[in-house]
Amino acid sequence: MEIKTLHKLEKQAYKKSHAEIARIGFALFFLAAILAYSFATSGGVPNNLFLAIAAVFGGYMAMNIGANDVANNVGPAVGSKALTMGGAIMIAMIFEAAGAFIAGGEVVSTIKGGIIDIKQFGIDTETFVWAMMAALLAAALWLNLATVAGAPVSTTHSIVGGVMGGGMAAAGFGIVDWGTMGAIVSSWIISPLMGGIIAAAFLLAIKKTIIFRDDKIQAAFRWVPIYVSVMAWAFSTYLVIKGLNQVWGQFINSLNGLPLVDFAPQAKPSFFTAAVIGLLIGVLVFWIVKKSIGSNLPQMKNDRASVNALFTIPLIFAAALLSFAHGANDVANAIGPLAAINDAIMSGGITDKAGIPLWVMAVGALGIAIGLGLYGPRLIRTVGGEITELDQMRAYSIAMAAALTVIIASQLGLPVSTTHIAIGGVFGVGFLREWLDESNKIERQIDREKAEIKDDKKMLNALRGELKKLEKKPSKTVDEYQRITELYRLIEEEESSLKKAKKVLKKEKKNLFVKRDMVKKIVTAWVVTVPAAATLSACIFFMIRGIML
Image (cartoon, rainbow, N blue to C red; front, side, top):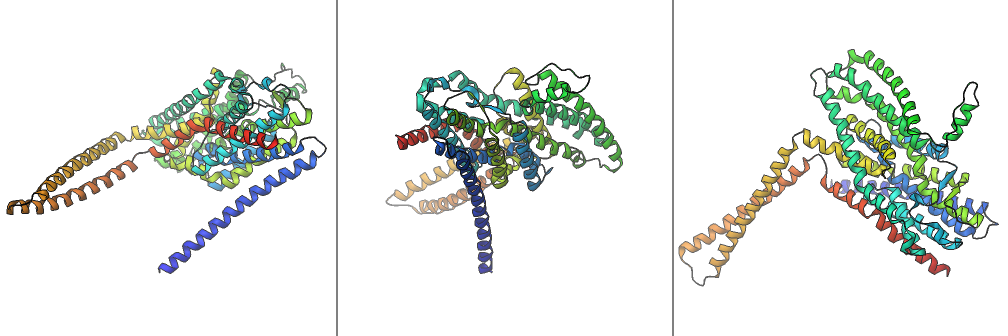
C-alpha cells in the first residue's frame, strides 16, 4: 500500500515539474522572440543591443504584471465561483490585450508619475537608457518575487520604485520629486481604506435590503436591478475615464463626421461626459435586469443562493471591463520605460513623452496576456479565496469598490492603487462578515483560551519549582516522597491541559473570517515594494555602468 502511495506521489510530482518546465520554456520562447525581432528591425541603429535587451526586460515586466496584478480583476469572480479559473483567464487575457491595443494610446509618459526630473540627465542618453533598463528589470524581479511569495502588490509602485532607484543611482537624490513620492506613500493608506469602506458599505446594504428580509424573492426583484444598474453606471464611467481616454479624441472626431453632429473637440473625456454616458447605460441595464428577474421569479427559491445567482452575470462583465481598463492603463508600466529607451536610441534625445511603435505595444499587451495565462492562477487563488471566503454578493461589493474608488479618487486628485483598492475591498467584506456574524464571540473565546494557557503556564511553573526544591533536599520524609510522586502526576496533567488549550486556540483562530497571516504578509509587501524595487534598480544600474565603463 505504501509503495503504491509513493508511486502516485512520484507521478504527481513528475507531472507538476513537467508543467513548470513547459511554462518556463514558453516564457523563454516569448522573450527570445522579442530579442530576435528587436535585433532584426533595428540592425542599422547604434546601440541596438541596448534596445534589444531593454525589449526583453519590458516583456519580462509585462509577464509579471499579468502574473501578479490581473488577479485583482478576476480573483473575486473566481473565488465566488461566478467564473471558473479557465474562464477567468481566457476573459482576462482577451480583454487585457484588447485594452492595451485599443486604448493603450499612441503616446505614453516615459517616467511614471513624474517622480524624477529627466532634465537632469541633460544630453546623456546613455546614462538615461541604463537607468530605464535598471528600472524595468528591478520592477520585474520584485514582481516575480512577490508572485512566488503569493503577495499581490502594486505594479505601478514597483515601476515607480524602479525609476526612482535608477534615477538616484544615475543623478543623485535631487533628481526625485519627493512631493510626488509623498503622495504615493499616502496611497498605501488611502487606497485600501477607501476600497474596504466602500466594499463593506455595499455588502451591508445588500444584506439589509435583501438577505435579512423574510421575503428575499420580492426584495431581490426590487433591489437587485438597482444594484446592477449602479454597477453598470460605475463601470461605464470608469471605463470611459480610465480605459478610453487615449482614444477619446479620435472617437469625437469620428462622431463629428456624421450628419447633424457637432461636438466640441475633446482630448480626454470629462467626468460629466463619462457620468452621463454611464447613467444612460445604467438606466438601460436597470430595465433589462428588472425584466429578466421578473420572468424568473416563479423558479426562484426564497434563499441566499438564489440571490447570489443574480449577481453572477454582472460579475463576469465586471471582470471583463476591469481587465480592459487595466490593460489600457497598466500596460504603460511595462512599455513606458521601454518606449523611452526606444525613443532615446532612435532619436538620440530624451523626452518626457514618447510615441509607442506597434511592436512595443505588442510586447506589453502580449506579455501581460502570456504572464496571466502561465502564472496568473496562483495570485487569483490568493485574492479569490485565501484572504476570506467570497460569494457573488461579496465579489460584487469588491468590484464596486474598485470602480467607485478610482472614480472618486480621480476627481479628488488622490493617488490610489487599483491593487490596494481591490485587496482593501476583500479585507473590508471579510471584516464586515466577522462583525455581522458576531465574531466578537470568537474573539472572546480566543481571549479565554489565551487566559487559560497563561494560567496553565503559571501553574506548571509553580509545580516545577516546588518539585525542584523537594528533589534538592538531601533527606526526605515519607510525605515528601509522596508529594514528589503527586507533583510528577500533576505536571503531566498540566502539560496535557496546556497542549489541549493551545490546540483549541489554534482552532478558534481558524474560525476568524479574515486570515490574519495573509493580512500581515500583504501589508508588509505593500510597504516594502517601493524601497525594494528602488534598491534593486540602483544595484542593477551600477552593475550595468560597471560593465560598460
